[in-house]
Amino acid sequence: MEPLFTDIKKINEVIDVLRIIYEKRYGIQNINLTNSLKTINDFISELKVDLYVYVEHPYVDKMYRDTYYNYFASKRDDYPRDTIRLSFFKSEVKEEDFRNINENNELQEKYLGFVILRPTYPFVIGRNVISPKAFKSNDVICCLVNYTATVNGLKLDVKGFPHSSQDQETITCAETTVWSILEYFGNKYPEYRPYQPSQVNAVLGKFSFERLIPSKGLTAGQISFALREFGFGVKIYAKAPYGDDFERLLKIYIESGIPVVGAMQNTQGIGHALNIIGRSNLTKEKIDDLSIYKQISNNVNVYDFADINFEYVFIDDNYPPYRQTTLDKPASYYTNPKWLGCEITSFIVPLYPKIYMEAGEARSTAISLVDSLGLIANKDILIKTFLTSSRSFKNEISLNGSLDETVKELLLSISMPKFIWVTELSDKDLILQGLVNGMVILDATEPKRFGIISALIENNYIANNLTQFKTISLPLHPFKGYSNNLK
Amino acid sequence: MAELKSKFDIIIERLANKGVKVTVIEDQEKNQIISKVEKTLEDYRFDNQRKIIESQEKIAQVVLTA
Image 1 (tube, chains in turn cyan, green):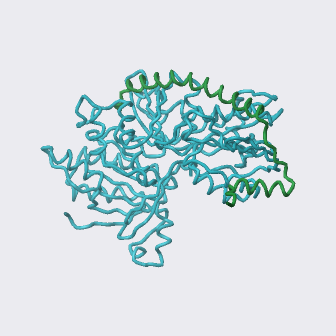
Image 2 (tube, helix red, strand yellow):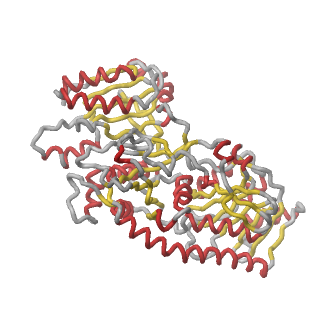
């Protein structure tokens, strides 16, 4: 192994350092060098211009080593085992800051994540976890996971979504999409664990009649199969049968903080998988554009949050992370004309296996309950449906300073399953302030029976106490809505 | 043996003592509400069953190459 080289540079000076490392340590030149540096430049040009970068080589990356030992080492050409790692900081850092224990908190505050550069020219962008805050365009909320990395001997944390580009040989879009999902859940919840690409391939191989390496593409069905094998309770939705509800259901799952695998296609033969992990922030213009979803009894117009035309956040292995576009034009950031006309034709939701009620059932039940109770009359309501763990929900309720204390105690006194569906009720003005004035809570583990746990509607707390429905009249002022799913 | 009261029942009692109106919805009304919601859900599930099968067929045909 070569001696450790490190350097700290402003982001606009990094390419020069990398050129020297590639020439002196990897011995690459000409087209490979030019194309690899272009790939890196395209990636870092998406990042803010005032970042500082800690460059280190050699770096042993577990993901690249996995593909190296399982594939690249078996080829005639020599492939290096080691990678380069770039660590990003939001302002200037110095070598001595890493040894000054008083600077630790400041370094942590500045740290924005890392990217691995693999020697798989020119597809060099490897595993990376970078905070959305490092990117020029970052007015988004999305699923993020905490990652710990050691930079210059110091452990630092970053919140980001795991991303890697394809190397075009061992991993293409299907594998990176599955890997990303596993990396996210494996680092976030104790029920799951991260897997390396060779382990993903081994599972995908159980459902394949063709060899998987070199990777020539898979079907969306294989992704679904692999996620099931890794312990998820997978739900799949195709655009053709679901029609108008297709996008609504997709948005409900994203709003639930679940990274969803989208499959996009066009008539020119493109088939591509990516993760959809979040959305842009709510604006008045988007709310104003919202049309009525349906009218229910008592002259109540229902607007659905899932009809808002947000820009969604994509983790696409052909581009740097956190690409933003609308769901109806998912390939709008592609410049190659082959990608014209792409649309999301299906999506796969990696659910916790004991979530038995699906998004459409939850939404229909909530609207039907509001309609049947008939407590709301002559007004417009806006519904927002999402899934959450009862643990997170109760924690937010406990900390909600704007919620009436009695209502809070009533909500906290109910026994709940591990996951619940919540439909918040508000209107166009309240939602812009992050406020709601009612909610319906459903049992996500109930696939057959009446799964309503409780509801807050128009100054009434409705408790479904198995044998009885109790209505408790309470003055209900608008309170802060749930916001823990997307950050 | 002492009665084992749930936290919810204790809160309800406390609210009732404070004069908060607590109404038990009559069985007939409750059943009407449940029937209506269950009917909506049943219709949704019936329709959804076909969509699930069609989705499975479609998704098996999506070849991811890019």
